[in-house]
Image 1 (cartoon, rainbow, N blue to C red):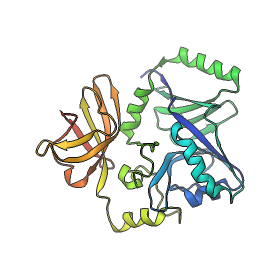
Image 2 (cartoon, rainbow, N blue to C red; image 1 turned 30 degrees about the vertical axis):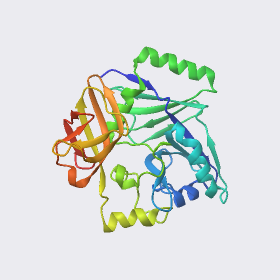
Image 3 (cartoon, one colour; image 1 turned 45 degrees about the horizontal axis):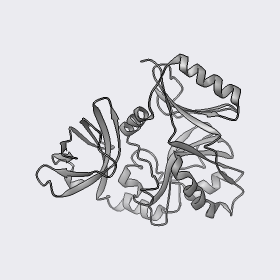
Length: 294
């Protein structure tokens, strides 16, 4: 598999830096930021006291007192404002650095960095998501190295549209909170706990009581499923129905992506409908798998 690279224009970075950065995140983040080693990343989220996510992200630790929250760029300012209400009690700074650091996704056989690693320097931050996929964040203020790396990528492989990268993320089960879905979901609805974005052993964090109670004493009535089909991908918000009861909605699409003549989507469905014959936008769904069961 040859190298492909993808401009990640829809993603940005919220940087949290200062001697109390890990303490702030420990009390707010669903992930265990305090015990996250320097040079590693995990999935994480921020929720309201009612357990509703207002942000989720890749949480990368670049140094003892420096963290990056990589998320949809449209969600950063709201997240910074909400988290800032707690940050005033800590020695930290919260900065949207998306105009300085530009993301590029890479995939292929030549991507061999250790999965889970974070490799920062002044010019580039490399975040290895899997054996074959990683992100590079390039410092646009370092113009010489920035332009040199982009030129190098053009010689190493073919540029692909961001939608192709989105397709891979959908296959991983990653749903991102956006302005349209702020406070719409508890982590279990989008399988964020199944994917490792919730640490139930780390201690208290905002929303922990609700999230943990559901984990230990119950089950969410709605769950994330991976759908697939042929033709055009359904839009976010498209309703999912069954062949048997086409007038009844059993869920909705929360993320989707096209790849050639196939599509992959993520939908939140009611558990009782997971074995039904499903349809979306009038077309049959070829595959339907609950996250965490494959």
